[in-house]
Amino acid sequence: MRGPVVVLGDTLLDRDVEGLVNRLCPDSPVPVLDETVSVDRPGGAGLAAVFAAAQGAEVALVTAVADDAGGARLGTLLAAAGVRLYALPLAGATPEKIRLRARGRVLLRHDRGGSAGAPGQPSDAVLRLIADASAVLVSDYGRGVAGHPALRAALAATRAPVVWDPHPRGPGAVPGVHLATPNEPEARELAKTPPGGSRLAVASRSAHALRRRWQARAVAVTLGGDGALLSHAGSTPLVVPAPPAEGDTCGAGDRFASTATLALARGALVSEAVQEAVTEASAYVAGGGVAAALPAPVRAVAPAVVTGGGDRIGAGAAGEVVARVRAAGGTVVATGGCFDLLHAGHVATLQAARQLGDCLVVCLNSDASVAGLKGPERPVVPQGDRGRLLAALGCVDAVLIFDEPTPEAALSWLRPDIWVKGGDYASGGGPETLPETEILARWGGHTVVVPYLDGRSTTDMIAAARAGRGSGGWPAASGDPAEAVAQVRSTAKGAR
Image (cartoon, rainbow, N blue to C red):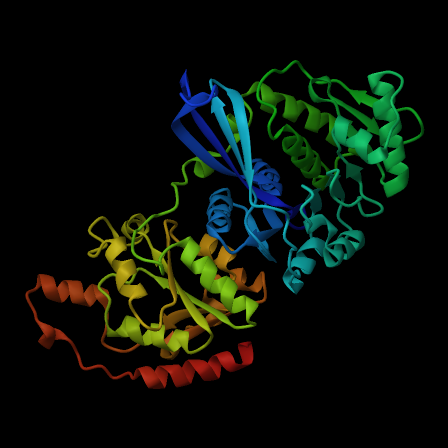
């Protein structure tokens, strides 16, 4: 593969709520579900990307993400799956699908998030990503990403094989796609196929009509447990039967499309890709569906941290601040760290960062993250107190706590214009050496370094306390916050 596999489309937050039903509601004849466990996962294009990454591919997801807690949750889940997120701004709320289940059966599906918001403009990095892909899967769920004019132009121009998984509410495939993969009802609706004839005859007419309309090289109509019908040359379709399989079919279409895309990326013929996809989708259903196929790192992602630390702490608070600043055309600044034993050096960095834009969001390592990075004796101050101390500073607008070793998931969701790190210019460190630089480049953001305020270190503070030294153990500070602000503003001037 010459580049990553790119999945493009609408991502939803899916939640399965499992429970037991032992009684009826006293005021209405409906079952009462006693929840035992719930599992969050990316849905839509996000699920297709997770499946592709789980099969060993390098996967980048181009999707629209809202500035809310649901968007933050998606960023965390996708990062755990090893998917690189290239997020477009999304007006409105994150769409959510909640399935209430008992004994393996769905009792009710609850959708929320409202009507689809308009996705924002893709960055140059996104357009280059599509051009350099080894294959592209368009996973359309009818919420607008697949219809974005700039993305459609990039899809039409790429030399990579394109697989289009359509939705009746979405746009038609761009001309020339290698393979379109509607299911049987979608194919009939999209092609406006009149009834009459056998099931295979109707599927064949639908596939031929869509292939002509979209100028597609091939159309595979998936037939559930009966496999797929492939229209790819002449008038005689290829019918690919499926091995017997029973189980939860949720996500089977995404599994089919992602498998076919990976096969085409490896150079397989379309017929070979469809046969592989049928086999894999059948095995997926027989193996327990999405509950069994979801990668362990995604299943292990804990629920979002709840700190109770006020209205400046958490994904909701951070999302509101960022959305407000963006709507006003302002600059979003973010920084991160453990901030264990908050000291003057931290404050100098935060003050300098805040003066670079119109808001400052601090990405704070959770207790589990700090312990993983610095050992079991850290942090000294728990995350709730660290978050409240930071939120109380006048230069901090919001605090977002994250559990991962790095803030990649938080940054992919926040998409700050500027990411600030404390550093030492004398040592030669600079934005080009920071791991966050590549992440910021996905949406056109920039990284800058703020000089440290000399003589301030959490590690030294802990060592001094353990040694019984007081404040006299501190060296005199040679830095000046005002000087740090001046230096970093001159560095960031060109970046903005």
